[in-house]
Length: 360
Image (cartoon, rainbow, N blue to C red; front, top):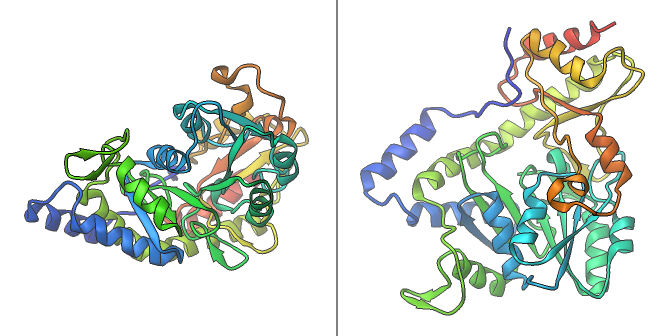
């Protein structure tokens, strides 16, 4: 049996949608992208959504729209993908790393508060692995300190915090539609916001700074989505809740059937729904195999696995000299993701559990 760590769920509906766009002759940004923006905004419960070329450009455009620039600081979690920090650097600002909560691996509000300085402009809260960060606590800090709250929801399409969907919790929110995401278009992204002003500025930023055709009022970029990607996205959006339910079923099964000692299974904080972009457990010293040997053991038996993420951002060479974030570094040394995507079958997830429990 072979079970990949990730696998896009694409079918005839996506193919038909792309062929319709190709037949129309409008393959760049056009009416299909506009429809996808409207549908995605409605799904998130937010007035505005701006489609972009990928998740990193979503972050960069959101930060620029928020006015982040040279001399500013932006607080980001030390445990996440590199783009959360590099997008800050792309603005000429400095990412300041906050440690994460040991139970959820999401940004620790107490450390965020400790890292605020007069230079702080914004906080990026990452909804890691599909679980929202403590958005209420981050929102309170940002409101009190006059900061912009940006959600990095690249892994959390459809997750909720206190009944509200990600994408509607911050001033701006950024999504990725990379091939392995819960909603996949190959490449693509979205920025959501309740602000008409942010929406207007985002649309200038992603389209060469144009306020109208050939009138450039600020420095902008070519960050537009194509109608080809948007066509796939619209079909995937209609399937998203079903995909997420299957991920939740697979995660629930793991939670009751993985019994090997020395593994710490992921937990879900009260008031949050988790849509399991990754099912990332932790390999402790009590487990019979070190993490790298455990990975090899699983791969030899056809089970895909990966480390998300092996190096804390505060220890990345590009950010040498950053403050120590001990929880993030501990997680980087111990986490291991196993397959949880919708294409994992009942027999497949049973095989995963049997294989893991067979390590003695």
